[in-house]
Amino acid sequence: MRFIFGDRTVAVNVPTRAALEDELRRRFRAGEGFALATVNLDHLVKMAASDDFTRVYAAQDLVVADGRPVVLLSRLAGRPVELLPGSDLVLPLCRLAVQEGMPVALVGSTQAALDDAARALEAQVPDLRIVLRIAPSTGFDPEGPEADAILDRLRERGVRLCFLALGAPRQETLALRGRARAPAVGFASIGAGLDFLGGHQVRAPLWMRRVGLEWLWRALSDPLRLGPRYARCFAILPRQVVAALRQRRR
Picture 1 (cartoon, helix red, strand yellow):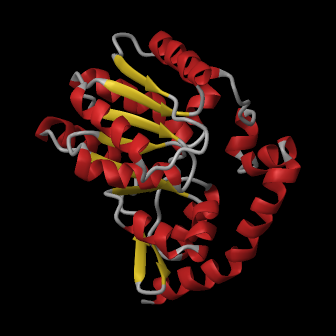
Picture 2 (picture 1 turned 135 degrees about the vertical axis):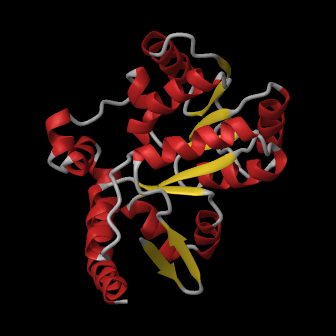
């Protein structure tokens, strides 16, 4: 499944969880890092408005589908992919890190949220080694000196899997910079995933997630902030449907 913005293309290049775990296991064993992004409609809106963000996203090593609209678009395009929300990947990737003996870091959110998320992860994934928890300062610039210092700490501590909970586009931008400055680190951009785990945000009930209504739960939980965001997401759907059908015909 491909999304085209001008002369740049963003592709969902990992179709299933099994394929993702196989590729990450290969990279862990080869000493290779990665930048993993989870594309959703909000990200597509941001890419349409920002060539810089499109450039960053197009350079991610691995892209999976986060959100049922992206999955539905992939089916329309004749290139079906599995739903892999970032929040649902945290525990499986931690289990994979334990199996492969990989140290883990948490970056983003607040120190309290990271501490609570670490406790939840360690309780659910025995033998997990979380060696760093870093909450960047308010107004964090993923291209500034604080970002350089964070990436250097990850490299020096031998981190191999780093969860980034900074929100788009900061997390994807930091991940891309990390590919050059800390090339053995695997960066997984997971948005609010750590806040959910630590209980600092409440995720939609499972039944709402299963029927594709998590967006409604989130919009109602913070309508002033998220209402306009989801309105913009729905506004781009018709154009994306047309693009998906064109891909199918090709």
